[in-house]
Length: 264
Image (cartoon, rainbow, N blue to C red; front, side, top):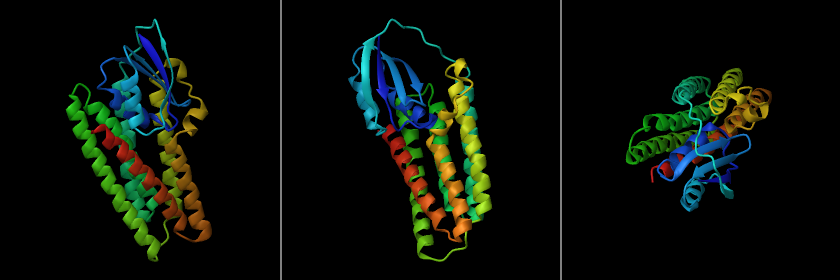
């Protein structure tokens, strides 16, 4: 048995973890995957060569690179029976906030909230694919990933067109108080998801270091929308909301392209 250590700089949250799990699912010589999200590290326990594993990680464009490979005597691994239940929990939280942010974003005319709702939907897709494809064939998993990726990509492009329209025309200002309030709730929700998923790896990690939560890309997005909401109020302009919306839609498109890679 060998263990290979990878550094993955763009592995910001458990959503990327699940993307990597799905990407490596079809490689038969992998015995176990051990993720360290706060330090952006992945340890792969495997038999035989590591070349196919390394190539698959590289294809996700998360900046992954192999640091080392060495022999190990470890042959047993801790599998938690509650992992599936926790995946259902974080899927439910993400999908609920997709609905909340999409609804409040449309009502308050905030493209930042609409964009972040699609980011939540993207995470829901990743967790959903992980759950529904368990025990299924690799072909089925690829088909579901392709449909999810194209759907997400289409919504993000529609969002970009709407942002461009609002840049060119005078629009009513977004409701900054709704932007801030809903983003604070989404911030709490992302923290809970990250906490639950990290707790499932190792009971000793249940206390969760603060740095683990605040390195999450999703949390940074929520903070950005809060700041944009305040700037909308102070500057009496919708430009901060459109700018943060553009940034988040770009990240959503990146996520869609990663999901589509799983369908290849």
